[in-house]
Length: 468
Image 1 (cartoon, one colour):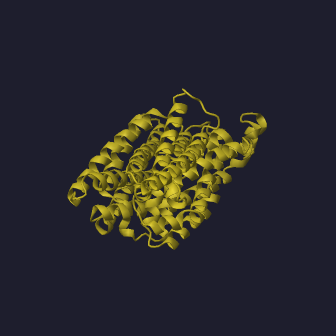
Image 2 (cartoon, helix red, strand yellow):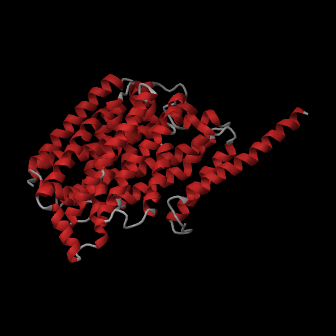
Image 3 (cartoon, one colour):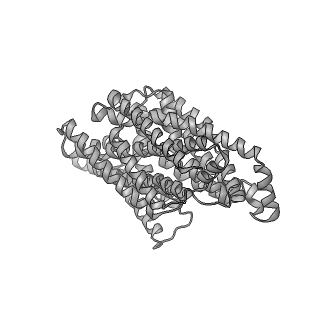
């Protein structure tokens, strides 16, 4: 592909996305509250764009293609797991979250528990997880530049600067609206790329590589790794999304609980068949082009498609990543400014001050995300790791706000601290854990239940003693 074509398309595409975001900012972002809630006017189409767009850029497409290149058909499972989480969210917590109506997830904890400490711990751990996810998204900039034969870290820096400009101009509505465009183009591009590879003898090339031993025989078996790795992804991703600021924000920016339910279910139905395409594209890239890293998707697109079509598809993937980062940034500013600064420190802060602080926080978050992107290479691994971290620290206390009246402040604090410590000890290899993706979550849940039961009884005894 002529790099000039790609640069031209990227520039035009990014300007168009910024334009959509600017329109949304004027319509639904004229105040800080509207910018973080999209005016609570999100319909089914925007909801699907936001939900599918959250996954379909970096993890689903770029990471899924790299997974297919490395593991063959086993690379389908990340995409399928992401789809399944939306089905689970729709039938479990969707209605309860909407009924509460809070746009900031820590507000759920403030209503439930008698202290602000669980909310602060929750906010701190959630922001860490979200920044890690932003770093994962910025990795795509590295991957694209690597596919072009350029410096990957330079690509990460450029993507970060573009994202900062986009996020500073856009709001939640803009991120959702641009995601709709990205999702349509990416899915159409994946279908077109798959058809082109099939017409180019892709299946024969892959089976021939298996027959010759160039790739393992398990390459054509989606269950070659067994079911354990599937559940090691499904459990942390599902539990993390249940206790995710982005999920809460998406549900409570919707016009109704019904809109959110339909959005989740339709996103699930859309993502299941699409999950097979990145894996196939990755298998082709590994066997035909001998590319098997994060740049595989971009390399195949530039090889198999018309240069202009490839440029549009690549631009859509990068723009989808930008929209995802913008949603993550909005989630962070919601927690840090709406919940902590305005909710706990300065309730009378002006909207103008919040808007200025929004841009400052965005800049800091983008910088830290860039450092993460430069430091790591495994997209799917880091995504699952961040989900496991959020679930270990946040799942039990949040579910207690929705379903368990006996949950206590002490239980929430102990649960988050235990989950946090176990994850850090495992990451640093001080205490390697078996089933590291779910063990901290299980221990955190048990801690929440046990400590809550003990302290609840103590609270009852104390109240009876005081009464007598």
